[in-house]
Length: 259
Image (cartoon, rainbow, N blue to C red; front, side):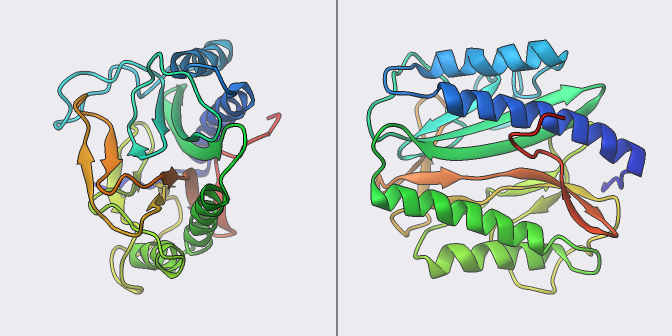
């Protein structure tokens, strides 16, 4: 069931989203050659603690997962698309990293993700990350009253496909509110003018996932969580929590905000 949020609820989600934005900014600043993924997870934990927020990721166990998720961020490196578990792996020069983070504050949830390179970036990785951000921006721009879910999906998919990248099937965005995953699903590819109408008060997480090699294939790693590209190519992930308002899309997980 789709729950439309009031303006007061959206403001509360904005507060949760700002915690997420600060956590992602802190993790990005801490990421360097030699830093472990567990250390990055601890950075995010510190931001959540300071804000009095909890993690909707920690202990989360969907039906596909063999174990509860053990961290507050997903840390996916190089050919890992999403859901990477932070480990003792230490970042190397040129690694492409995707960090997904959530925060629950006063009963409301925010969810966002960024991708970036550590050390000297490969030009192909820079283009991949920039395209993920462009796809996210296109999806957000389509998130207006009167459009449909398919308009968001089409906007994202067009950017990805025109750049020659793959899109992992069956994974995309979602509704969000008091729970991290709510209705509706928000695909990363689709037909314009199709799907549920976008109404004022709908809050969704829009999250393009791109496969650099151009294919759509992926597989689950032995940990049962991490999704990796079938062709070994690198992947990027970008995400914001967005509210549909009469004034246009409102991004609730802005980064580098002092709010």
